Image 1 (tube, each protein chain N blue to C red):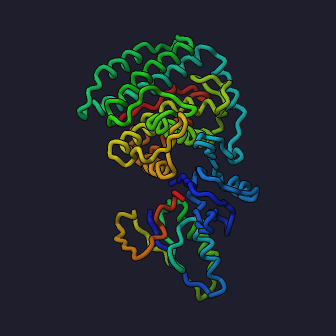
Image 2 (tube, rainbow over the protein chains, first blue to last red):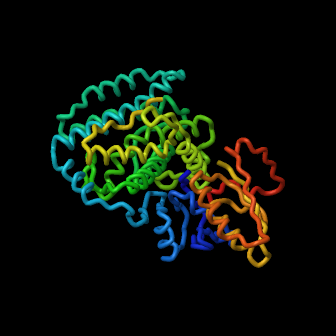
Length: 330
Length: 86
């Protein structure tokens, strides 16, 4: 029930009557129920003050900001309810221990390839010929070994991803061809959709990590030196195929997103506000979908799977329980 | 769980119920709110309503296990539409 709210309009968000209120530039006023909010995703030009920030902090609600061209610009996170020096120490120790780090990085790569493969298999069973790509993915998966240095693991992941992106051309209609995966800025429609989807997955992983005492900057597959929360990049790799890509395939194949939902300008191609809204809606619906969880013996939402992944990692680091990466099982 | 909350308070105190309800639900009409709510939040809301009410005032909460059980027809604009995409 912890919901994400997306604000696409321009205006002001403020604390009002112990909840949050959006006042748009057109002077429309809308109240958001704070009690079931997980995070606010701000895509428009929004003003706010410190009173709002303190309130969001008290309520444990994060604010994710998407800036120019809708790149992820940063988050205002609530003060940590959970601080645990012990967790951070174990996290760093695992990073510093070459063997341990390789083991974790290998798990992440294997989970991520498994999830890419499951998309390919699904579409293969729906009249696309993806056998070559599937075998390329399987081949990459078979090369994973705990003993490999990180850059080789990264290399395997990159090879797999390349094969995986080739499936996009088969899965999607002709006018949505992905010649190459490019960003900064994305040159065509499909790259732009991938970027937008990935940034939503990334921001949701930031929220999930924040719910634990893990430090989002200490990661295993990606280098912690990057400017971003690199642990979030690690986790996002596992979930991108399940969340972002499946939404993308569905919307484009059903014609819910068409070429009209993009604005092309000097080598960059970006989603229009309408396109972003369509995508975010489908994305949120996906986050709310539930699956039977075999170990927990109950239904859990996709969003909760992100949270579970952070818990599993923490438990592995603190209690030594084996870390099994998220692999689509249904 | 999906709930509908209606309240009837003294005229100069109605804003208190509205203010409380808005933290959990969507305001749809004068004295009426509705929306999806978790079991935990519902418990909390009930407690807060009890604390708020004075003699002679009342609040009613109708509960449905999900909004799919509710046959809901809206004439005119639907205030609950797209609450999460603003």
